[in-house]
Length: 518
Image 1 (spheres, rainbow, N blue to C red):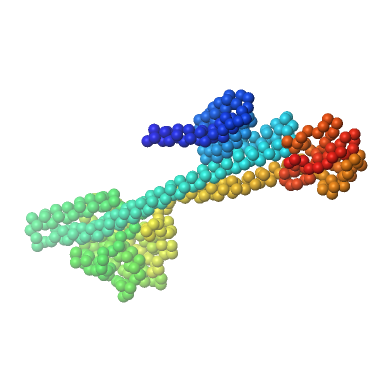
Image 2: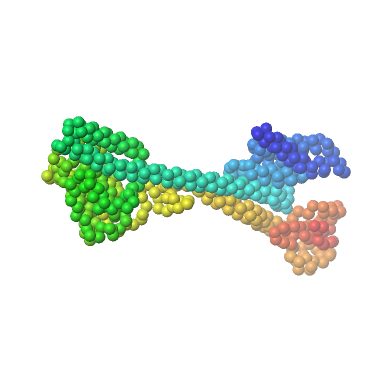
């Protein structure tokens, strides 16, 4: 694959060299033939080959090479167009290119005006060529590079969105896994605690023989061990911010209390009459609190009477589960880790309530919760940002913004490059015109009316409206006879003020007047 890519690059460079060498070769090989045409042609072709060779790694050096070639061959202007555009496409940094494209006209101005004294007209022409063949193609290439970067940023953004969608789906799966684990912990833990309670009752029953009571004890110990193992396994599956599980379908708080009574617990319930019409969120949370409290009472206070209270107070509902001191102590088994109450406390906090749990003055244990009858504002759980992701799934906090930022930066850079590519040449051309026009017209403008009033034979000192400063004769103007002196003036046309009027004198008198050949 790499060899194929290298071949394509070599083929592209060879084609570029052929296209750029064609104008120079045609000019050198067609009549009239200049002296040293063949050596100049060979040097031009070698210079172009060197520019093409270094053009990929050092694009600005290629621009300098063809710029040097334009000193001896004007056909290098075509190569200047191409390599300036490629410099904009290939250059990663804009600062070196800006220094080059600004330094060349500055150096050229000093060279032409101060050293070579070629005149403002030549300086202006060369500046316009540099602007059109150098600066503008580079800006276009830079714009194309920024546009390509924008396309790449768009693809990266699309890939980031796809990864975010996959992450959101995985987040939903993990949360559902945690929810299932929570349901298993709460439901199975509650049922196993009730089974252990029944086994303990059988173990203490006086009407059973010793063999049956021993079997009941073994059953109780096995259930206690299974409960602890279930606790450890489910603890590894649950997340710290796992959502609260829902109560079993169709099970009300009254059903939960009746199930505890059937298991042998002594439960007294005081429920508000309209418990069935509690808001869904408050009913789920109250159910969770009562189930966890009954599970703990069955495990750690077997045989102790339990009181369950559910009452509404204003805009809150109060849940309270209190067990007395266990008559025979807690069931033997592993010590409690308190994770169940911690999970319930987090659930109560999420709905805007308060949970308290602790021993009572008479040696029992009480779990109390105050729950609001209205859902809390916001609705977003911890670890989930407000809003939804693709497909309606909750969007995790920390959604990747690097690709989105790069996309915005790329769009901004493309707009900036486009505005620069379109506006900079016109601004520079206007600036050049404003610099060239005053220098070309200051003190050298001869208006039409003054020119018409001048008569052949008039002494030069009597010519009204004659400017104090002359301009250089235009290129191609024929030289006057030896005894005749010609003066040239401009008409001040903006922006290309050129030598327009020609006045010729002999012996201090006007011998001819007219327009120049330009």
